[in-house]
Amino acid sequence: MTPGPDDALLAGLAAGDEGAFAALYDRYGAALFRVAHALLGSREEAEDAVQDVFLDLVRSRASLARVRDLRAYVFASLRHAAARRRRRPFPATADLDGISSGGEAAPSVDERGRLARAMRALPPSQREVLALHIEGEMTFAEIGAALGISINTAASRYRYALEKLRAALEGGSR
Amino acid sequence: MSPAARRDEFSDLERILADLRSPDPTSALRTRILAAVRTEMATGRSRPAPASPWAFAAAVAAGILLCVNLSMSAANHAAPFTPAARDGEARTRAEERLRAILPSLDAQEARCRAVLLLAAEDLVPAPMLQPKPLSPEREPWESH
Image (tube, rainbow over all chains, first blue to last red):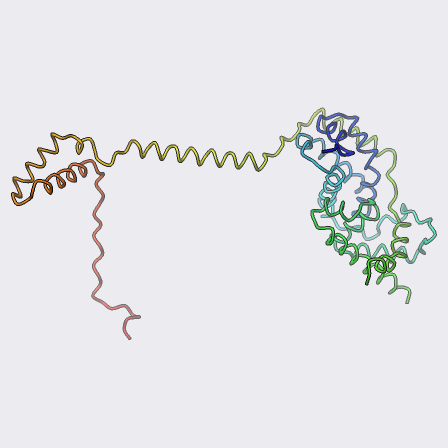
């Protein structure tokens, strides 16, 4: 069996090597933060959730040797950390100011507001898949591995989420 | 609808969502998290690795083997005939007494009954439970 790209990193994490935790942050930290921000709607909550992921890794480092897919593992851990924090309601005014919108298809302020409201209204299972695909840049196979669902389920949840968001955008433009 | 058509259907929306990406973390977050990791490693203890399913299966198998072993050991030490029954002298005495009481018993029958009598000597006495006599009164549902 050929070693995976994260095998050396996993070995370092399991051994409690601080440099391995720094490398893990450099590799996945930004994506973890963006996904957490999309799930929780607040910069402070997202930062705390990412920190929870790292502390959970430190505490469970003895069992990290058995992890096969580090990327799926850390995003699954983030999902649990976000779920613990999500017991508090999603903020009514999500942190939209920090969201960048400088591309060609930049939506108007009105569209951004409608999209944000529609995303808040999504069921958590669909919001998770949307966040992992858009913010985490994960494939449906990787999302399936992280959430413990099939590729088809991940893809269909994503599609349902997009249909609801599009309906929200079109509903506002009429 | 083909997968390609499905992709096109949402391509505009996906572009908008990609443009609406969440913010990047501040550089302070890296410092904060690594400091928290350092503190946790210095003060906290690593959780022990959870027992694997194989360890559980091995424990169950060991338990079953122990039970089988103990059962076989107990069975081997519990002879079907007690020492008294195997004792030829005692059996002969019992046989003679039986034949004295019942002269009509033939020799083989007397030996057989003597063995059974001696084997029953060491049995634990069980209480005789008297069955409850049937009530002469009829139950309501028996009236029809």
